[in-house]
View (cartoon, rainbow, N blue to C red):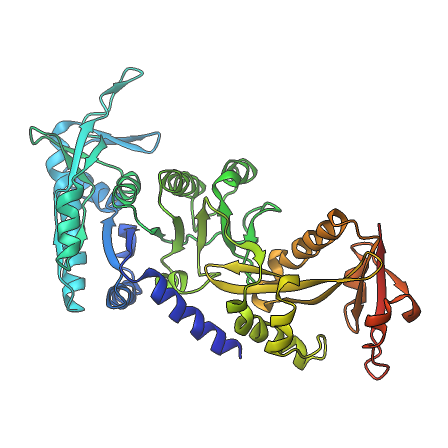
Length: 440
């Protein structure tokens, strides 16, 4: 069943993202890595699903190598490369070389890419007495011509070079360029694919409000939580993924979301299949940055009933929940709440009302793949608060295997006789459910 649900997720996401635009920034150190051919093949698969792709190759490492080989002096200041104007020709050579190598790989997948100068730039100038020379900033993305390339079926490749209106070139940060491009084209997603970019609970301190995957990876983080996460982890030493790089990507991903990009993602290029896994599943394979709610609690609709039944089925098989039919759920639809992530139902529960201002929390189920995210407790607290606001005197639950869990919320054991008469009639001695009450 779980495999079936994952296949349904893939189909749902293919429908969701067909015709949308994604921007992918790729660290140039991955171009010569053994997995790069796999990443290019995955790009082809994404393209075949109808996703419009824009690539922004990083060239930081290659530029350093080229400048060093020609004896051109350069330094880094606050993450920005500083060199004289004479170094710009070598920087262009290195940046376009990386772009050409990626275009060659794409042609091997029978994809047509085009390298273009869609970036209007301006120089950083002199800041605090430091002349930044050939370093520039994005001034404008030539969105009309870029969209024409996308409409014609091309995959645009944008080197980290921009030009002024008079034709003077500047070296631009590829991450800043990717953000500016994603905002300009109103991208659905922005991906930063970097070497070793796994944010694991083994290396970093996660916030209580962030979502971890079952294997202990930071799966999602709100833009509001990024400053606190950076403060908590600014002194972390991780040789596989430098902290300054992590901070840059988190901040740039936040800026993209605040600029209108739906979601940003940090992906580890050392993981095979990381791109499709992140696009076509809720928990993904990297770290998602979001502005809007990652998941939403809402009332169940009748259209949700098939998904809710599928969600409850594993718990019915384990005899944790009683079986329910579509007709039963339809009759009680107004009692149910669900938790939805990108159109997928990942949790459900009902608050039934009985005479005497008494309620019952029932049919609580959380997809096992998402149990680590604290959805169950949040759903319980939501229903308890709803009962209080409705003026209930008490809420009860019936359970065979999870009494300890409900006791965390203040529920206490009670006699069967305390159940409302209409609920007592449905109690089955052969099932032996325990009764727990929470009094207000």
